Amino acid sequence: MADSAETRKLVYLVTGGCGFLGEHVVRMLLQREPRLYELRVFDLHLGPWLEELKTGPVQVTAIQGDVTQAHEVAAAVAGAHVVIHTAGLVDVFGRASPETIYEVNVQGTKNVIEACVQTGTRFLVYTSSMEVVGPNIKGHPFYRGNEDTPYEAIHRHPYPCSKAQAERLVLEANGRKVHGGLSLVTCALRPTGIYGEGHQIMRDFYHQGLRLGGRLFRAIPASVEHSRVYVGNVAWMHVLVAQELEQRAALMGGQVYFCYDESPYKSYEDFNMEFLGPCGLRLVDTRLLVPYWLLMLLATLNALLQWLLRPLLLYAPLLNPYTLAVANTTFTVSTDKAQRHFGYKPLFSWEDSRTRTIRWVQAVEGSAP
Ligand SMILES: NC(=O)c1ccc[n+]([C@@H]2O[C@H](COP(=O)([O-])OP(=O)(O)OC[C@H]3O[C@@H](n4cnc5c(N)ncnc54)[C@H](O)[C@@H]3O)[C@@H](O)[C@H]2O)c1
Ligand SMILES: CC(C)CCC[C@@H](C)[C@H]1CC[C@H]2[C@@H]3[C@H](O)C=C4C[C@@H](O)CC[C@]4(C)[C@H]3CC[C@]12C
Image (cartoon, rainbow, N blue to C red):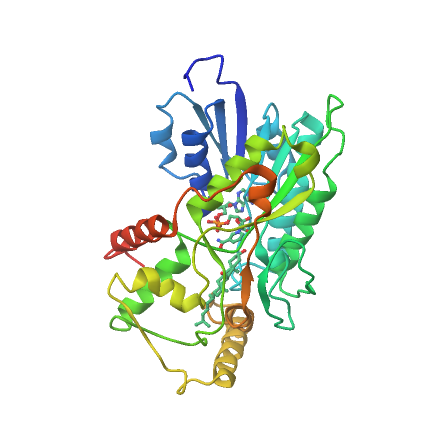
């Protein structure tokens, strides 16, 4: 499309635009939304990489702000056509208090919705999570499920509870009258575990493997499968939804979509080895040596230590009863809803996604943990 001032007229706001997913959404919008005039990137912590984006044809506005502060959100939203709300506190390790998780994920989302209503912004895309569905506290498997698969979605952990509450608020807001009299159109995307360039947990596993002499020890049976999705495809899905929401408001408004691509179903650890293996790590099978009850004991001990040490220091290891339960429960998605509703096809093949991620891990090599 021609790059003229007439074609560029849309203003987008990406909250959490400097996070792992947010950065990919920002870059994808710049590459794939030719109608973009201004891109507002709102985050608690702004990344230095934003500077390099300011020299292109799109006006990139960096806004340091906090989604829990209604006035800051309203000022950022005013005049935007579309809001992509990815900001959130992703914490399943006990780093933040439950109150803080609710404040950011639920109150922050309320603030975004109210800002849209007050200022007349009509299109809101929310980054939800597979965890809104499961795995549930009973550890029921979700096998090749889609958006309509019945599943008992019961949670206790603050992160999935907060994401579920926020998603409900976003979906209930669909159809609300915004300033100016038109209707708000909302929808929610539910990524499974995202991987790709910038994935902190992958980086942590890599450094842990290096510390252990190039080995990682299998903790979870290979038969427990997870769906994973490449960050570039999740970003592409956000961009596509945002583009199609106006034309297909009746179909897409108030809907949820799992984020999916061609990444293979594998156990969490085997999937990570697709990238860490080519970077020199190997996964040692210790299934017979570490039974599940012992892992659970270690996880519970970690939780106890976290509680005991809290007044002195933050002890937040990867293994706790919640992460063990998630890692140890099959959760796989098989759906084509996004393709049927808005023509989504993954932009990156599995091979591309794998290669890009391996290159990134290789570049991480030698960098500080
Ligand atoms: N990483 C995954 O596997 C995954 C899977 C499913 C859903 N999600 C969802 O995707 C979204 C992005 O996750 P991510 O993995 O990129 O996490 P991230 O932590 O890398 O990014 C979140 C961003 O939100 C910002 N943020 C946090 N609190 C804020 C506040 N009060 N005000 C403004 N900005 C704030 C952070 O600074 C960060 O840049 C989240 O909503 C998360 O729930 C992530
Ligand atoms: C038993 C240990 C050795 C392994 C622990 C792995 C654990 C840290 C991993 C396993 C599954 C991971 C979660 C899963 O991929 C999906 C999501 C959804 C998303 O909204 C936030 C991240 C999260 C919870 C992953 C966190 C890390 C988990 C629990």
